[in-house]
Image (cartoon, rainbow, N blue to C red):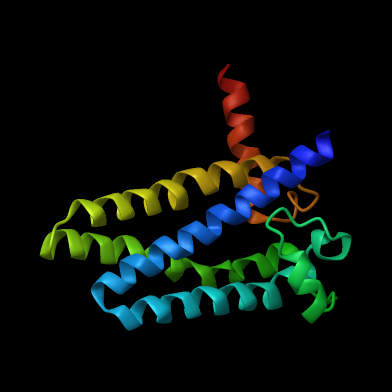
Length: 168
């Protein structure tokens, strides 16, 4: 039963990321339709670049247990690498930031220049999924991750948990 719940959570998490990229592409296309295609191309290439730069150093890459599901693809194309550690490689997550930052900026631009409730809903959904739901679900995985002690993000979550436990 626990394995079924774990698999279900992994599938839902990937759907949220795909939904985020689709919402971003829709917002981009409202500005200029080719921009939507360019945005999707950027999202795809940033994920592949992330898999090339970060995944080979991760415990989950070899164990095939990545909560984001990247191990299904990265294992086929990128071999495990020695000489670096996950914590130092994790800084390359910066390649994904523009994919999360551009749609809200475009959304604000669209809301100012040509307000519509459809755009408002799409911007709101993007922000809800990208800046609240995905981080919440990721934090759950980070707390029990084997890489948490090597990962800058995992350390921050541990520090927050320690601070909250001291307050109570």
